[in-house]
Length: 435
Image 1 (spheres, rainbow, N blue to C red):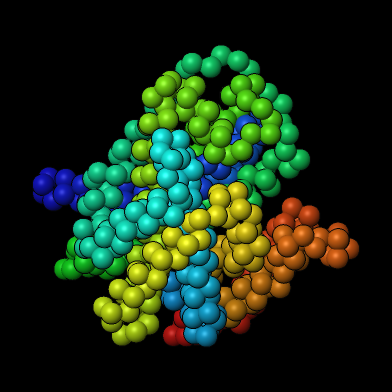
Image 2 (image 1 turned 120 degrees about the vertical axis):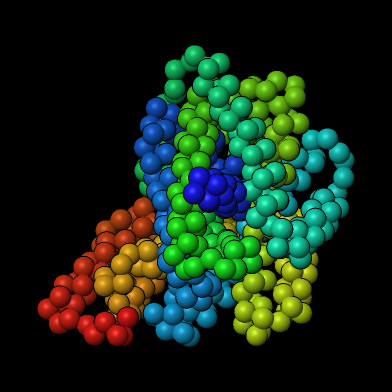
């Protein structure tokens, strides 16, 4: 009996480490320190907002995957099959066009350029060649990510955070953000973790199915849920630590410092002359594991749409890697800026789908799905328009919609519609067979 429990604990830990590494990529590493740097003494409030969108929602996405045990297509099928198909394609197009290439761009700027005078196309080519090798050997994915790469990432991060906490005695500086909590939530969007949850969650499902073919639905559900909680706890600890570290070093750097320059500076302060080497390893591993997860998830989805064709899987892997090399030639700041409008539109829909799939079915009937998702799409349009730089044209509308000036105008309408439709359900019970 003890050996069975030990085996289960080991499986859970390996899966949790793999899940963490698939989540923890370029944005997860470079965004929190600058957020803390600009939040000053209100670092804790920014951390709360950031972890809400970059930890809680993504882990709820993994819980939803554990419940559904299907693909991303299952997340939206209660709205309609047509909607779910369009949503799935949008998610994968965004994922493989923005966060995946961004990992190569960050790796070049922070891990390669400081040591070697090589062009970014060469870095991208080598980088995505390695990604290709990992993705085509996906049966070994969980073991390699969970047993080797993730522990290395966590150890280096804990070194940077731990040394910062115990070596800095200066007070935390003033805040320069206008809305710390809202800024934290919106910056959490840039991690792509909610989108990552529906993408890499599918990767985890397929990987677990390949590894534990004889396991029951309940056994796999328990394994994935526990792994999700462990991975989420690690993300919470490290995000908060990186944000606080950024707040602690506010007096050591210029106020106009960039995200990548700040992370470089922190690594030098904490780890000395060898800091750049440690940071290079950290950045390379964190970015690489995320790129592997995105390309694998996209290829899995395309394969599922083409009757599990291995040829479709391979063609998607090649296309994803080539796209990564091409778009990865742009610098990190440019890719982050380009990603914002896409995120302002797709992120609210993703958050709503995750929450609706994570809660009990009795509160999330097809009718509730359709009403809440439609409301979210309508009320996220002003935020999307504002992110394009056309805020002046919708300023009157933003004054009317609560939270719209914080780019979160969809939240209250979606909540109200959810409550109203569930109150209607209690008065007019829905046939359970339809759920």
